[in-house]
Image (cartoon, rainbow, N blue to C red; front, side, top):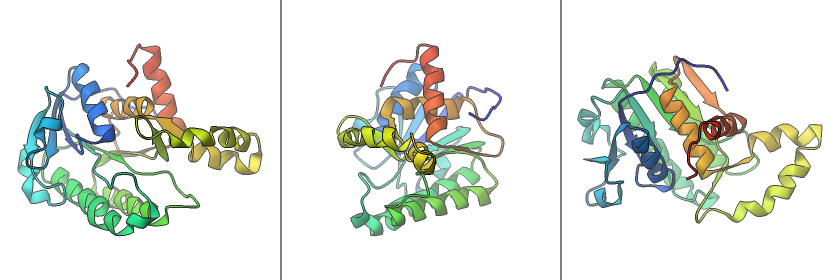
Length: 233
């Protein structure tokens, strides 16, 4: 895990706060005493945790929400196509790419000092369209001048997202052999609790440049959180 000076921000702005990872993350950030606001579509504020402030806007259009980002100094971008598959290539362009463009634009126009972005592990033998869009998102961040943490999970296990458990023996087997060991680590599975712990780490230990957290880093952050009694998600 790359080292970073610990700073606990008091104001956090989240896009995608009503989603699979977003709801678990906002719950944990509020529990830890952070002030959290989340971007929501009209009529979706009821899906937020009770202590989370709602900002109504369109995640694909920065002008609809960038004025509401301050005073947040940290933005967490979680918007993306649910349950990605090769059949959703058009949605990756229309939603995933458009939303990170809007997030970077809004962050640059506000007081945000640290952007947290969930990308995807790569290279990989499948999901090329999805990976390509996420790589463009990473490049946008690098070119923005913003300090950022980019997390690269492959698949996040949790409620409704458990089928890859059947692949665990294959991951173990691949980890035994030098030719497949790196891929097994880079494309390993993480749990929702591990992902939330890594995101909390990223928020509370902001990068000064652009920091990459691969699957082993995500797991390490979760182990560190467990040592200090962080709850399971």
